[in-house]
Amino acid sequence: MKSLKFVLSIFAALLIVAGLVWAAQGSGYFPYPASSFMIDETNWVYRGAMTAMVGAVLLFLARRL
Image 1 (cartoon, rainbow, N blue to C red):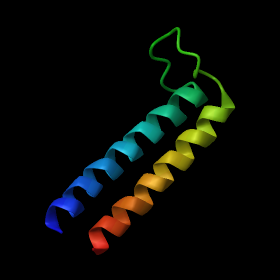
Image 2: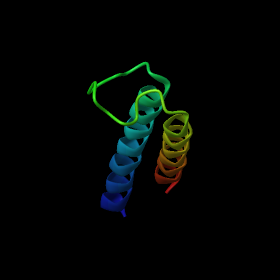
Image 3: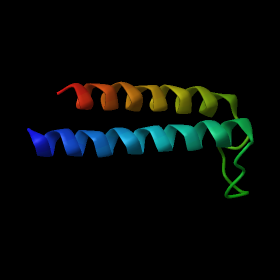
Image 4: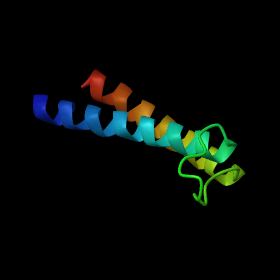
């Protein structure tokens, strides 16, 4: 059970970070790499926010186990 909690916490943290990067690229705050198709695309702001929220819920659930 302890290893499941650890793995789920790591996965959730990665989801949060990935979601925040996607949202930052979609909004234009993180324009790296310069040739990325995600820069200044509103869809990626929403997708990133949803991904980060799913990661936050998973992290909450992992801590409650």
